[in-house]
Length: 363
Ligand code: PMP
Image (cartoon, rainbow, N blue to C red; front, side, top):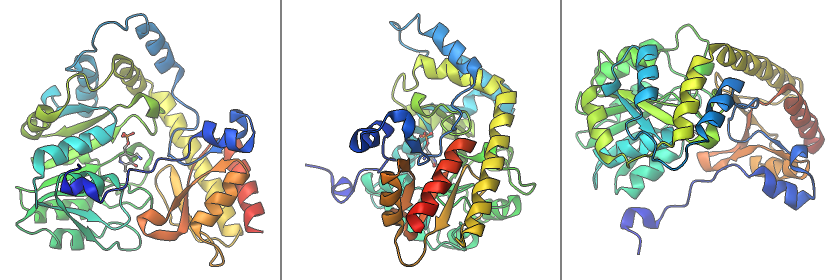
């Protein structure tokens, strides 16, 4: 019954849920460590919870379908107009709007090898043709990606930093790419993890918008803001592209708790900074331990890191062995990286539990 593009697809594979593993192992949920979906291990700020509790009193009415308050907060922080914003049920929603609005049967969409799987899934479902460009040191090869653009290309997806590799592209690389790609190709800069990046040469996609009306920046509250379960993200673009995306946006796609939670999250800058610092410390702990254990890893600027398992085992085997220890990570064979496992940075205690379990299963 499915349309041709959907016939060959497999559903997106999320990380294994904590309650499911707890049941399987006969453990309590609090005994499970989940470092599989790049969430903020500390959860959201207290200010977010307070704002949402207040909102709970009113659940009968539809949310503000235009997202006035969240757009006002975002536009003043990002120095853009509300007309440049598109709100999404997670940034996945924004990616979906892009494909629905700009990709038709037979159109080409350029992605990088090892990039987030949703780009291909959405494109194929719409009957688009995915053009996957080989990675360079696991990251996006922007020169090769620009060269892969043809007159059939409608959209290019760039992820900066990329998931699951944690690799990133510099401002100069992104600028050259944007200057090379024709203006009738929509370029999506997926910045789901941008808040974690501290590199001086890392570009702020929103600052590039003034020069490139064909650019769409996608961001989310799921990662550093700790609001993955609320499902809220946003796109920033020229008003023209935002207008087009808003035509395919379902009404009331962002619920009222997410709307108020997101505003409160943006206002709590101290919490953001604390989360970034905790991530930096956790990353240092994990990568030092990998080095000590003789495990290669891909240097990452996100809140996760992919490490290489010994040749005697596969990433999936290590994942399965860690599950038996009550630790959930992410094998990334489906990203063309069968010898790698991706682990999200957790709390200090979670990171140490993971490292102990990893040493045990590799012994
Ligand atoms: N982009 C990237 C690169 C991601 O890793 C994710 C989450 N895994 C998303 C977008 C979507 O996140 P959300 O829909 O929760 O905003």
